[in-house]
Length: 151
Image (cartoon, rainbow, N blue to C red):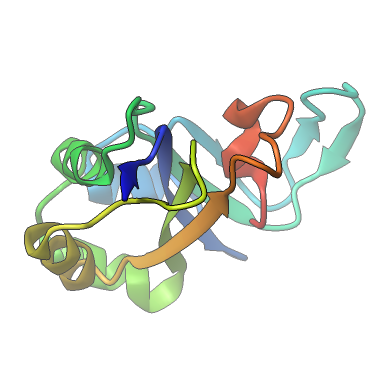
């Protein structure tokens, strides 16, 4: 089994009444992207405006080439608070996930998450969400938009 060509990871927190400043305060970390329900947003490609239907807070880890999800989990959790009470408070009110894009070079590439990474995610009530992109299917035209999928 070969190693994944690339991995991308974003910590996402989503909720109808989510206020990004509150999450920033609880996690002691500024987001890469955020929005409140009702915010006017401009489309990244079209430039057309729309109104945010929900609140969100996300933090993107650096892309890893070759793939290394453990490094991305470590980076994201080091950038945010280790206070498990803060995480519990967030998880009780909002959807919290680690959204990962896994990009394969071959039909049988793979990746492993260490027990430490899994424990760290679980203790913070972070769901793991994986999108796997096969080499024969092709890559999205602009894979930097990966975190915009399935919010």
